[in-house]
Length: 182
Ligand SMILES: [Zn+2]
Image 1 (cartoon, rainbow, N blue to C red):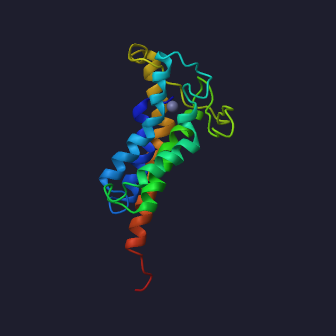
Image 2: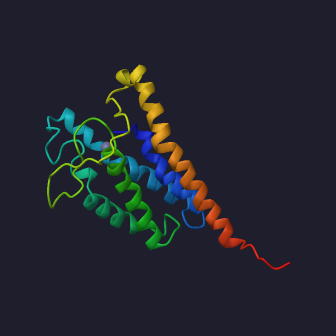
């Protein structure tokens, strides 16, 4: 996986880019939580669940189906999240589904069970450019941990900052169209 806080990059970029009228602060926080949620499957390591099992790390919690179910459940609270049902569902789904997509770009571990429960097959992106993050704090505080952060800055945070700026600029342009009249 990329480091857990790097999974927040996409919801942060989309949420800040779209603005708080569309993505309220509450929905933004919910999206960030949703983007990190799939990695709670690591508790399976302590319970003896095998990595390659559908219930193991990068298994069912990383699937599009699971993201759909969680987004649907979260949509029930759209009023509390101070948004519309459509935006709540879309934002939660994309935030959570982005987790598995980012994981699939890493150069270690096993693939992602994107299509569970239809198949337990694990998938990787054809471009595995992100250094996989070590699991465990002691291994993370090492030269390899620094290499992981550098790789995430280049391949995740930088594109997300550009993405955020583009959405923001587009919104500004829509709100204040430039007129050609003299
Ligand atoms: Zn993960």
